[in-house]
Image 1 (cartoon, protein in one colour):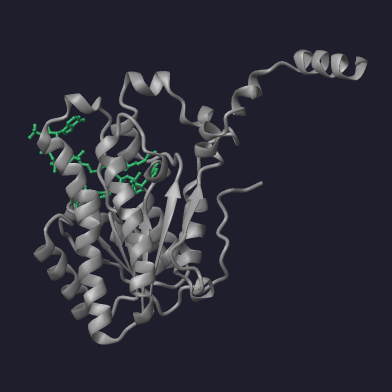
Image 2 (image 1 turned 180 degrees about the vertical axis):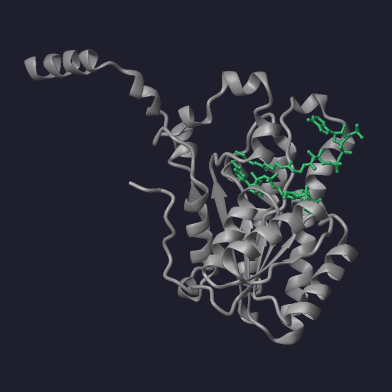
Length: 289
Ligand code: HXC
Ligand code: NAP
């Protein structure tokens, strides 16, 4: 079975202009590659201009279409508005925004400074709000349809210790997704989210599983399917949610985690550890009665 194969038909995103925040690295970069492969015109944005330019060049070389790299810090509303204006000036329109930029670190909450806590809230929640306000106002004022795809995480609904600012911010993004799915539907603007489980990236792994942690915690072991996700699997889902063919999906959060979060939720899921012999004994006793 190949988890690395593209799912959608050729040109599934032809004619669409997609803006991906955090599009220079990790999952944003992988999704961007696939959107280009499917014919989309891509704009990527993040803080680090040289990383963005390098990714844009790589994508252009591979897919033949120009990729626009526009640096900006999503925490700064004016910077986001300027970046979006530049995208419109250069490309003419933006049809979809993937709110993928994020920040995170692992820490006992009582060790965090207020600035550390606020930094994560600012990038994840305020950054997504800034991008959403800028694109939403533009789409509404110009009478154009729009599509938001917000990358959250499964602890947006469960919460999680040791990543509390991120959990609080992602929960806010999920609430925003569902709220605007209803409020802005009248403007033909869809809002959906994806909640990924573990997908190896340099950005997430270096911050959430630094050094010793990586030796002690194997993310694949928490997943019922006993593996981590492949970037192409996430890209397939994201491309589907951006395509017109998913046009009736609005306000949904799609989990893609191999069953990870439910594994911790079901009270009897740990019964995986019960040996076959014990099940045999119990069955024998029951049938004997
Ligand atoms: C505690 C920390 C810290 C850490 C920084 N700080 N790193 N506190 N533990 N590991 C504190 C600093 O001391 C400072 O507080 C405050 O946070 C801001 O730090 P700066 O370095 O000044 O901030 P900045 O330069 O803006 O960088 C932001 C960053 C950085 C979050 C610290 O890591 C970053 O840019 N990250 C972006 C990419 C990223 O995080 N990717 C992972 C996404 S993974 P004081 O009080 O000292 O001033 C993800 C996965 C979700 O979201 C689910 C996985 C399953
Ligand atoms: P990543 O490579 O570190 O991606 C984060 C991106 O956000 C980077 O490109 C970064 O670029 C950008 N960014 C950070 N702060 C920014 C700011 N202030 N303004 C603009 N851009 C900023 O990590 P990733 O794993 O691919 O994460 C991508 C998304 O998936 C995130 O939303 C994350 O929460 C989510 N997610 C990941 C996993 C996983 O297992 N990997 C699981 C669940 C959810 P710059 O540094 O250049 O700004």
